[in-house]
Image (cartoon, rainbow, N blue to C red; front, side, top):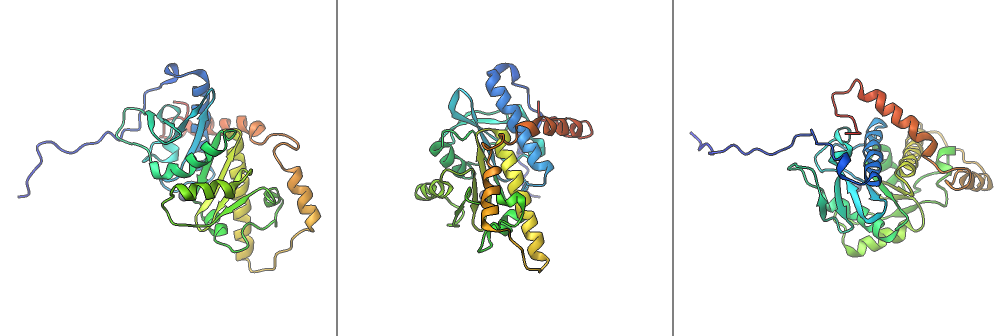
Length: 273
Ligand SMILES: [Zn+2]
């Protein structure tokens, strides 16, 4: 008979987290709510990759502190109180009572951008099918739909260098993002950031839809028609967040109502816990 251990190896992987609403500042709690909602919405719109990827947000008034997901949870399991507080280096400052930790190597991309771009409040990274597909296409994102035209002149490309990101690559990543809110990581996936969680989510949603449309159109095998360059440039300008209105703000209440309604028929804890 094989030896039986005295004590079974058990880990605390419960997803029932105690609410910390009354233990953090109102600003931190609001950021936790918005970030947890952002994880849920990323799931609702089909942009998850099992337990992988991250969305990080800066805590207002505490700009060197960020919130990130526990590594091991599905996005639909993430709640406001389950988010881990870290510093810019990725050191854990607070986490709930759990054996889950954070994915420090996954955080590296986020950390590089948060450090280099203080005005960025949220960084969102995905490995969606359409995002990976477009990131691998030589011509990249085509200005073939109204949705994709907003990104013309407002996104960067970062060449793939392997999964481990060292200090030197962090600099190249920041350089490739430049002043933009959108970065296509070649042979890898998509990244957006923004002045708010809401805006970073909205940008990612638009980018994802643009990629899906491009993949569908190219799969159809027909030649793609592109509008004249001046029309593309005019459209790109009109769709910038500052031109008409910020993105994600008007939409956000409807997004939260959607999550509210969905949580009523879900076995998962609501995001606001
Ligand atoms: Zn990735």
